[in-house]
Image (cartoon, rainbow, N blue to C red; front, side):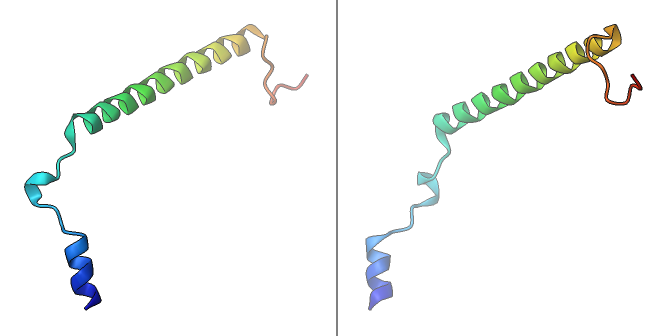
Length: 65
């Protein structure tokens, strides 16, 4: 009796009713843009740290000073 009631209360949607939609696509594109921005920012910071290390401003822990 209980499985019959659950089946009536919670019907399974048809295949044509289930779509991702434009909202999900927009969220996906926003996440791609966020990851690209974070990667770009990381590369900038690593280059800045490398230039500082080469200029002697940022000492390395392996330098015997």
